Image 1: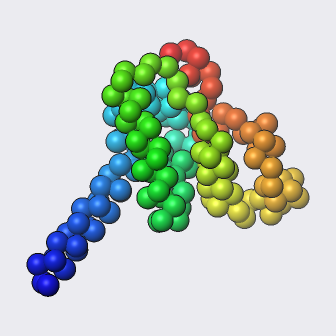
Image 2 (image 1 turned 120 degrees about the vertical axis):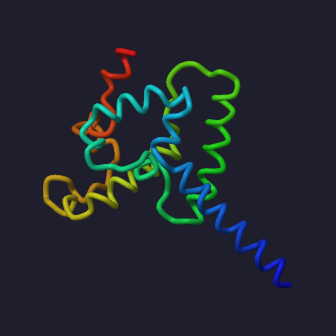
Length: 141
């Protein structure tokens, strides 16, 4: 019983460590399919304040994080493996996650009258498109 308990404990520690490692910007930029995303982020204002890709692109809830990373990580790994070239397009599920993470970080600011509580993600993008990723950087490369 002690052996099984120890094995479960170590598996949990390594799984958590792996989850954290694969959530780092350094890990994300190591894949060629993320090159444009990294370059456009590194030149944008958010690169000064946001520590990792996961801060914006991964759900904050641990259970949701594990499920989402399994799905999107498998997709990204496959694209990297088969030599996908080009720019990865953000999917609707990912857009919803990014929007929720924006609202989480900027909750106090969104209470101001100018932003109507941050209810519509398309409204945010109208003014803040180049805050997290500079689109022109992507076009240059």
